[in-house]
Amino acid sequence: MGVPGAGADGAASDTADVIVVGAGLAGLVAATEIADGGRRVLLLEREGEQDLGGQAWWSFGGLFLIDSPEQRRLGIRDSLDLARQDWLGSAAFDSPEDHWPRRWAEAYLQFAAGEKRHWLRSLGVRLFPVVGWAERGDGRAEGHGNSVPRFHITWGTGPGIVDPFAARLAAHRATGRIVLRTRRAVRELLVEGDRVTGVRGDVLVADATERGIGSSREVTGEFTHRAAAVLLATGGIGGNEELVRRLWPADLGTMPEQFVHGVPASVDGTGMLAAERAGARWIHRDRMWHYTEGIRNWDPVWRGHGIRILPGPSSLWIDARGRRLPAPAYPGFDTTSTLRHLRTTGHDHSWFVLTRKIIEKEFALSGSEQNPDLTGRDWRQVAARVKPGAPGPVQAFLDHGEDFLRSRSVEGLVAQMNALTGEDLIDARELEQVIRARDAQLRNAFSKDTQITALHGARKYVGDRLIRTAAPHALLDPQAGPLIAVRLHVLLRKTLGGLETDLGGRVQRTASVGADEGADEGAVAGHGTAALPGLYAAGEASGFGGGGMHGHSALEGTFLGGCLFSGRQAAHGILRDLR
Ligand SMILES: Cc1cc2nc3c(=O)[nH]c(=O)nc-3n(C[C@H](O)[C@H](O)[C@H](O)COP(=O)(O)OP(=O)(O)OC[C@H]3O[C@@H](n4cnc5c(N)ncnc54)[C@H](O)[C@@H]3O)c2cc1C
Image (tube, rainbow, N blue to C red; front, side):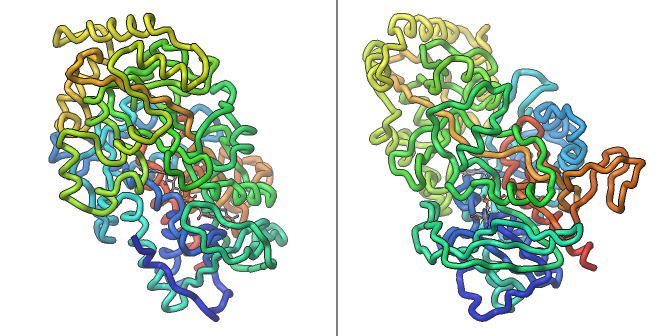
């Protein structure tokens, strides 16, 4: 997979109207939109050119869309109102600091129900026709979760979403409208008078280490650049475990000691920290989105590399002691409440117990490199997903992954589970009882077990029946076996809070301005914040808009879309302010 943006800017001038920091998806969108608007951009990126696109390149390319033709073709009835109900039920906005996050959420919903798909199509982005049902929710109509499938996979996954913007970048570099300087680590924002006027940082030694692995931090020099506007698109904090630990939300107990890394080390929050030192407001610092279905990558790219299982709904989820998790902690239903529950169990890991039949149909792995069929846009390989047998990358985990165990009996499985953790935490007889109780709920077409009821419901959706939900069966059915246990780790990934921005991406400043006393230009009546002139933010660094448009929980596929939208909004805000 090439990087169309590759190419040297040579002796091009580093003088620009706008400095964009970070060449992830949000930075690429913003830089190219600003250049389209006629302004010159200096794009600074700490990694090498091989890392262009940041996390988005590694992503699964899932996009949240509302009432799309893909949904309609599959018989899904969606609407902006239903999506808004779901979003607000998940976000559970509850603080005065949710002023801008609420407004961003509404604007983003309009975007996802409106021009998002058309705009992406005009850039050449195409979608896989089967829409996924992520975050199925907490069981309440007004609560967390997607009422309907909305997770649209980009044909080509992460690279498929990055490539159009990398191509636009290449075109602008050719004319000199954008100058890209890699190996530039921004350390500090320049503040002169009451505005941000530029950036200062370190020039890092050239390093051709492959994408994602992590590059040298050896410093060879220093740089200072000034411009009329500085836009931070430096991503979140998910790769910086000390920072995540420091900001870990109190309602999620303590951060686990053992976890896996779901993002490269470059996602370290340095941009947000620099903005804060310059007087920017970073709100909802403890709102985060970490997954509970992480597995250790047997073939790691970055340090501690974990892969998130995108689970179908059938696996039995048990804690480290073999106790079944309570509703709504079913696979793929409610990420944060599951994490909250797991943090009360006294152990860092949990388990899926499932069958060969379930793994073959229901295990998808998040990440572009884990889906070579979709990433390579290979229909023949994709068609093999409906055939019997586990997809290649899942089979590779079964064969090589340290977290994957198989046995024909519960006793044999438990012996391996206890051996893997080094403690006799699970009693085979007790676990067999849990499994038998669950299996007994399958004798009728109806059930009091809400997970089994959810399986029957899921299979009424054609997409789930086709490729996502195995026909309900007893876990102890020998025809469905062998039994499989997968040890699950917490996987650190996303930052939901961030730099507070208005709808033009203008970062708000720390010193709050009273609504009546001396509220200066740009202050929001009744909210009491004002912009820090010259500073803008987009993508994960801005909590995908507003400092946390997701609120407390996300509906999935909303992060890439959040980069697209906030990158565009900030670009347009800058273009307006520079007029
Ligand atoms: C494996 C994986 C799968 C995912 N799947 C999905 C999905 O299906 N759907 C979805 O919506 N989201 C998904 N996501 C999340 C999504 O990809 C990210 O949230 C999003 O791409 C973040 O983009 P960004 O531009 O804000 O930040 P980043 O991609 O983190 O980019 C920030 C850039 O800034 C640079 N930088 C950082 N600090 C500095 C500094 N001080 N100076 C200079 N440069 C700096 C970094 O090197 C990086 O290139 C996934 C993420 C991963 C890792």
